Image (tube, rainbow, N blue to C red; front, side, top):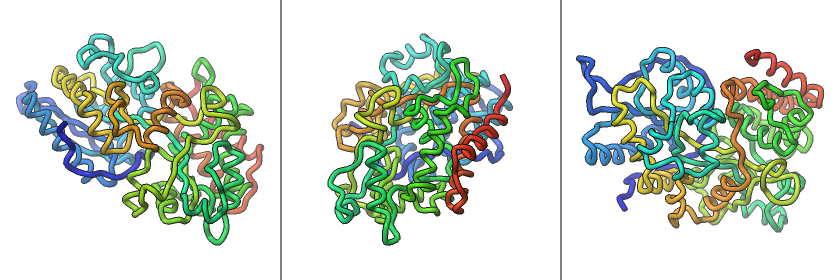
Length: 436
């Protein structure tokens, strides 16, 4: 198999900072005629934009060698990506093919700017049944043709620092929330802390409280798509998450300001004993942490083993590949999607990025059988749930993610976090959602 010729480190952090920027376009020559050129907006998956370019460019060169179609690559940081896409959907001046955070699928689908993946389009890339069901569940609103196809799959797991656990006399990693709190209290001493959070990262906040919401029987949206942020289960979920700092005091107050993977750095540098994250093993390595220094178990549940319903322990995380409907080179775009979702590319790219292929046959590669990726693969198969596939999902991430951020700020400042204060923040967030 041809191998990617660069190593990459990093983990995906989906940030929704909406900074306006201009958009580029592709697919035409100066005279307006369709050309054998595609423009591709790739999300930042590695430790830097330059690393992503080094990873992706050899693959794009190989695609050009096989098809004669040149791909112009732009790697866009997460802080700009959603706004760039939204600007492109309104201006019509976007790329031919682009990466989107899978949680945005239904929101971007609602703009009408993305190519629907009907049976004909799926057949052009080898068929819909090549993809695992959990990944397809985060490609658009139920009952509609998907707005994108899965490219990289991820899930949350609990990573623990083996030496810190040994020093604290913790014999085995926790599997329930009560065990996490008990372990966290043993770890939180002498300037060290039990578990890390990214309290100012809106999307990460949503990922965690969504899962806790499932564990409390809440979905944050009703069956007909209306915001339902103040249900007892939703309030309990948010309070449980913030209480890791406010009540149990196993999270450092400074974590309230974390938004750019600082909790991973603390973990790798023996300042925090546990962290919930998506496929961060290569980030640990980039910080000098050897593979035998950390362990991994499924993310915690209230009791028993991970599964569905109240035993859900992760959201379905990942990156999808979408095509702008107004591309001047639809055939080339479909060829490119087929190439990127081929077994060969799926194995190579997901191995490099530390994620799991959403293509069934590519998952069988031995590269995805190691301890960390096996936990993620199994979680995606049996105990992960897709975030609400509603048009307002991106607003949900912003307003509820901000509410959680503000509650962490209260906890860090020593202000009380009560059921009433949590409900008030969530009520304020719900008032900012579009009325139906």
